[in-house]
Each structure stands twice: as structure tokens, then as C-alpha cells.
Image 1: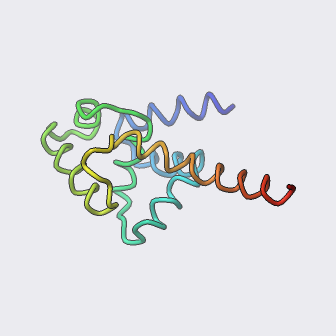
Image 2 (image 1 turned 135 degrees about the horizontal axis):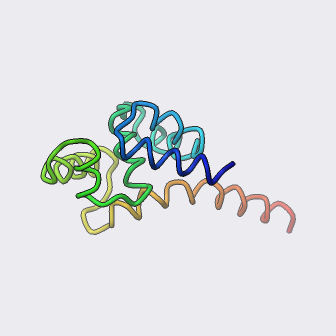
Length: 116
């Protein structure tokens, strides 16, 4: 079932379907919460863009799927870097993937610390 959800998620993204963010949030709830914690004013269109980068879509693919130019995607990445305080020397897509990895690791480290 999880694999089917993931395949549906990719298909929704490729078709620029409005249901993409809802399914993404269902599959990766910690990701959206993490970004909202960093900037509570982040818009749903920005979350959708961040979700695509989390899925490791290239700039060219995001442009193709969202019907904008490659330059428009680059500009959006730069604006989100400022909004989320991401340094220019950090890979944008990797930073997005790290957001979901931080929460479980912190919880895991805390539970390990409590038992010792």
C-alpha cells in the first residue's frame, strides 16, 4: 500500500494536481510541520515546491511539471533559501530531505539518553 501511495504521489506531482500536497502531507507529516516551525508564514504553494525538492525532482522537472521556466524555479529556490535561512553553499534538495530526518533522530537520541 505504501508503494502505491508513493507512486500516486509522484503521478500527482507530475500532473500538477492540487491533491499532491495533501497526499504528501499524509505520507510525510513531519516534513510540513518542520518547515512551518521554521517559518509559520510559509504558503502552501511554497510547501508544494519544497515537497517536490524533497522528492529530489530536478529544477528542469519542477519547471516542466508546474508549467514555468527553469529560471522561475531557480528564482523560487533563492527566495525560499532566504525565507528558510538556507545558506547558499548548502544543497537545497539535500536540506529539504534532512528536515524529515532530524525529527526522528532527535526523538531517538532522547529516548536512548533516557535509558542510560
